[in-house]
Structure formats: structure tokens, C-alpha cells
Image (cartoon, rainbow, N blue to C red; front, top):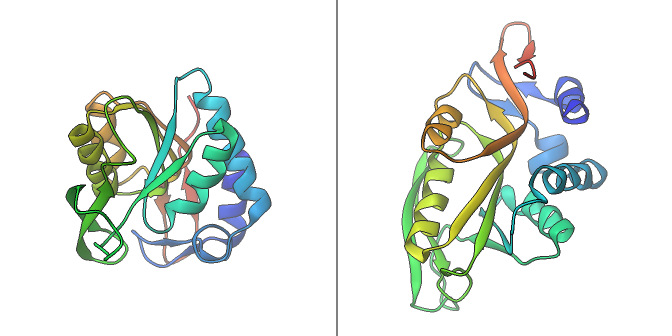
Amino acid sequence: MELLEQRILRDGVVVNADVLKVGSFLNHQIDAVLLDALGAEFYRLFSSCPINKVITVEASGIAIAYVTALRFKVPMVFAKKSMTRVLPEDVYTTRVESFTHGRIYDVVMSKQFLGPDDHVLIVDDFLANGCALEGLLDLTRQAGATVEGIGIAIEKGFQKGGASIRAQGYRVESLAIVESMDPETGKITFRSAC
């Protein structure tokens, strides 16, 4: 998606060879107009699928999942990174290693909101090593739900996550795939569309 790629080139910050900061428009401060365009693109890509839920993991994926769910006119459900007193005891649970935070979370989702009748679109802001997606896929397996597809705003194509998830047979649509980043020059190269 050229709009997203241009924004990454303009405002993205290459911290090192593995870390790209997009906090000024995607996951700290959010450009609502850009986000709406991302939701519209995910709707265009997956509108032929019988999606009745959009799911993500707390926290940065929530905004993108929300605008996508709004386009589909379906609920958005997010997995929480910790149990709270108000969550029911009847939850699906999995462990997720956060690339960004460098720690492991026990991620939970209420069984009330995900079940075998659900056809889900998983949406997230980044795909790096695929740990968050593996966790969400595990939750959907536990629920007996069907994964219709996975929508990613920014995929780091030089890390293993995208290839690993696609090798499992899932349809992954990434709106921008970063092929490489040079921390010395700040240059970002995108994978060419096929």
C-alpha cells in the first residue's frame, strides 16, 4: 500500500537493523485518517470472506483492528496481556513473547467472545518473528474458530514471522513489507509487489 509506505519513509525512524519506530502515526500517536485507509484496505482484501469477528492482541493492534471491524460491521475482540479481576475464569490462554518489549506475556481471551462458530480476521500493526500471531492462532485453535485471514500493517520481511505463518497455510496480507533497514543511513527498502 503506497500510502503507508510513503508515510513510513517520511516519518518512520530506523532505530537499528531490527527496530522501526512508527510511534508518530501508528502505535503511539495515531493518524486517524491513515488508520481509516488501512481499515478500508483490509476490508477490500478480505470482504469476500465470511468474517464475523476481528481479533488482535493488546495494545498496538487495537486501533487498526477497530477500524477494520468497523468496515466489516462486526465485533472486535482483543486478547489481554494479563488477567484482571473482571475477566471471567473461563478463558483461553497462551504465552506470547513480545519482540518489542523483550518479555513473555500470558495472553488471555474470554471464551464468551470467541467460539467454534466464529470466522476471524486477525489484524496487527507489526509482523516480525510471528510470536504474537502464533499466540492468536493458538487462541483461535483452542476456541475451534476459523481463521479466514491475517492482516498486517507493517511486516518486516527480513525476519522469520511472515514466512513461518504463510508456510502453515494462512493467508497473510501485509500492507507494507520492509525488506531491509539501514541504521547508518536510515534507508528503508520495501519488498516489490509481485
